[in-house]
Image 1 (cartoon, rainbow, N blue to C red):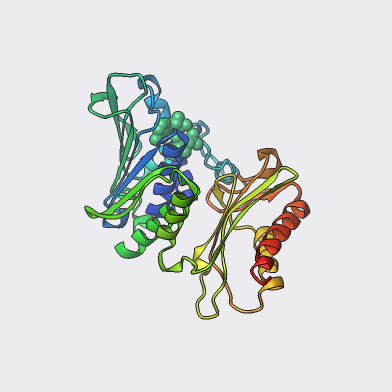
Image 2: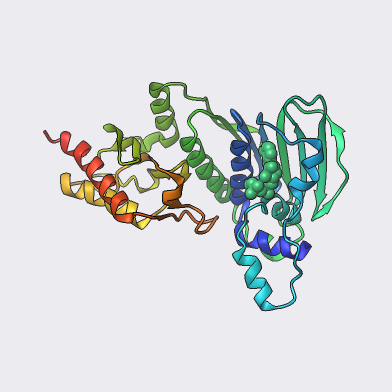
Length: 326
Ligand code: ADP
Ligand code: MG
């Protein structure tokens, strides 16, 4: 199972930011209202994610870090099968197989917290610990036992930039959650929970920084089970804001051909100048109408009704942008 975990880890855990993504998503899944991320040395020395979510009950701690994979690898066919199993239920097992790992958690309505340590895949018995309600996960010395992967880690600054980008995209996805990020003991971002629309807009501005458009339009339109909301910037001739294009489908960041095409067309049709505007858009639809698990580490989706989604996006944005010319 150790080898299987390490292979699964290679699938999705490319670098420290991939670990941060899995851990923070777990915190959000657990209903956290506050998530703190502490990084040392670009994440290669330490990644710590703390949350105030529902926690894990003591009897499920072992399970949380256990792999769901039971098969042994005997042939290349098996290997391919493992890779295609994806990552569901495998994140903690995979991360803990390639690092020195500890998880401490106190479940809601429990008096005692427990801590479990996993060292390169070897799970130690859970012990009582001090912790407020919620969960802390510590990942030290990532890839210490997989030298081939550790070698591929980039400069501290580069790895931290990936983590910061990731945190920005998660903070934009969940405006009602407080996020804190520190690097080598220094606070880098403190994003308070936004409780109303003005605060939400302010938080978007804070995340986008100088890429925040001088002029932006509020989008909020629903039709035929589709709801699009967020902000679109008006492009400037001078500056590309391609790094500040965020599109979420049911709360997940996606990069999708259909979406990109609809957005590009809407802009091109109305505004003839400028390129690559900044935007932060949220599309909500019936989960049955979209498959977001095409690949867990990529940001792909597959809409059941591609045409409908495309036309809805195009028309909604086109109409909003056209008003700016009236
Ligand atoms: P998955 O998220 O796909 O279920 P993971 O390996 O990421 O798989 O996590 C395994 C399980 O551990 C989760 O299903 C959840 O029950 C528990 N868990 C992990 N992180 C947290 C957390 N921060 N708060 C509460 N439960 C958690
Ligand atoms: Mg998970």
